Amino acid sequence: MTILNLFSTDFLQALLGTAAAISTQGVMVATAIVAGVGLFIGLFLGVAAKFFEVKQDERELQVRELLPGANCGGCGYPGCDGLAAAIAKGEAPANACPVANKEAHKAIAEVIGASIEEGERKVAYVKCAGTCDKTEVKYEYYGVQDCNKAAAVPGKGNKKCSYGCMGFGSCVRACAFDAIHIVNGIAVVDKAKCTGCTACTAQCPNKLIEMVPESARHLVTCSSQDKGKDVKAACSTGCIGCKLCVKNCEYDAIHVENNLAYIDYSKCTNCGKCASVCPVKVIEVQSA
Image (cartoon, rainbow, N blue to C red; front, side):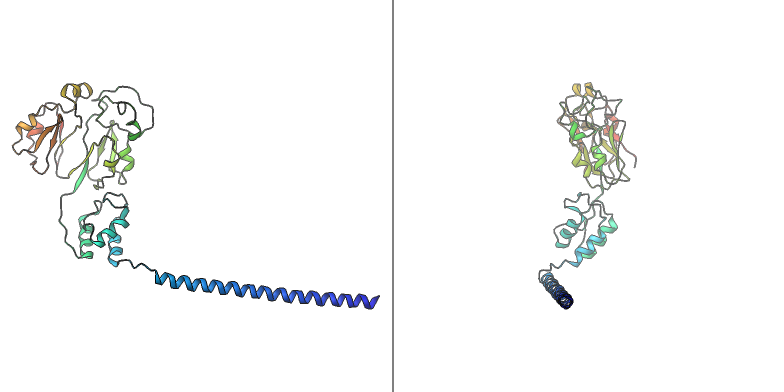
């Protein structure tokens, strides 16, 4: 009985040892297989990356470094990366970025070996002077404080003038440069901060925000196309289309269309006669 027990114990130990050896060997084999497969995949991906590599234009990278990185979309391209690629390919001019300054434009032109035509910088201007004390209110609005949402309400918001600024700040939220704020019920642009990216213009449902030359000193602060009587009933400072400004301009720089005065800044000399004869003072005179 004792010999049988010893034999059985030795047999079991030997069996367990063999099983352990086989298990260890299996693990080593599996590890080697996994390592081999991993090495093969790594080599394959490395070769594929070299084979399918898309070489990026070095000039594109240099142009991207010179762009401000605002990604505002004011250039018309999907962010600074898209504009950099377009400039490098010659599809966009070196000064296509409205946010970059003249020094950056010149540096970009040197990178791509091109010349640039410097034009006057343009800034945003809100064509409305219908502040809380000058415009009539139809009802109290308690909806979402967003101009595009309010535009869906009958009458386009609570102000009697359906052409004017609603004052809910959609343009303010669109500006990445803190250049526009709501003051006394209407949007006002800080020209010193405005980069001309046009992000605010796209957000205004009434299309009140116009890009004007930085040197413009006389600007029409109204967008209403109603007749004079209806304009006065809605806002005390709206354009009544009287054409006195047109008659007194010696340079053919101002005209009245659809009951509203428009200034042609390519002809305007900033003489100020239009503003001096305007009976409702709708032509704002800005300091230099």
